[in-house]
Length: 294
Image 1: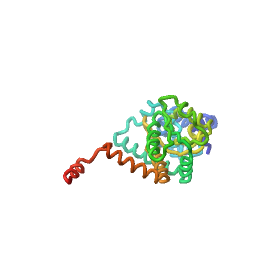
Image 2: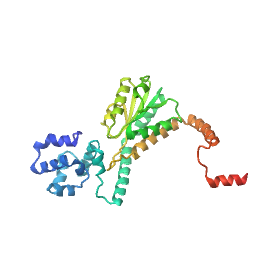
Image 3: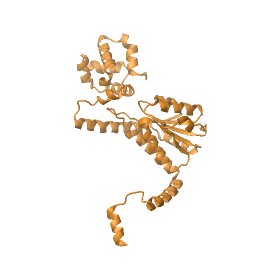
Image 4: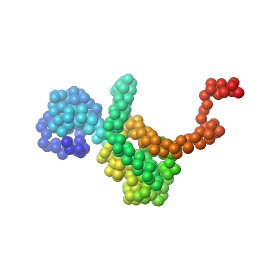
């Protein structure tokens, strides 16, 4: 099956379609934001053709059934829909349906993310990070908190981690980068141009770039030498970062195992500082018991 954009393919092959197929293609191209979430039966009612015609059309387009075409369309529109359009996707659903759909989507995202990332790929990424002189981490807009989370925990075990701040001149932050350095770029739809610009600059400096993104052919993946895939789809205006955070957690755990001695030493030192400076809240009952014992 041709792997291009489904909407583009419908337009390209339109003249070869039968009358019924053209009606289906017209509806999908005009109402792609709604069509992506319709059952074959619901679409047949909207288009005015039989449900079997809808299913056969999916096979004609090279898919193994209607659900496969629907899933592909959902991925296509993820980067096409405006925030307002995405806000309307769950309009008309009950609260129970929205809750169920949200959890179901996250579970599906996690399953696909696990399937897409081979252990050897993760092991190679860990090797690159371990061998790098510096590790630059970047993520703009909604991906920013993911980058901060990753940098925060990597900082416990590595002293060469640099979180790129988009609030200041980003290019001055990477002026000393070269082929000895590694980059972790986190970017999801709608992919930030700022992230792409910095990735391009780091690629020119011959850095080893690792992208954490949602598709093999996503813009960030095209600029990277290694890709970790994490599905972020949610049928609403907000992206789901359950799966991206999961792959980041796996990366942190694998690095921690490789840096266990350093991590243990650092945490032993930090635990003393945290205790002396009362960084964390104490359990009141436990505190009272200790006071009674004294």
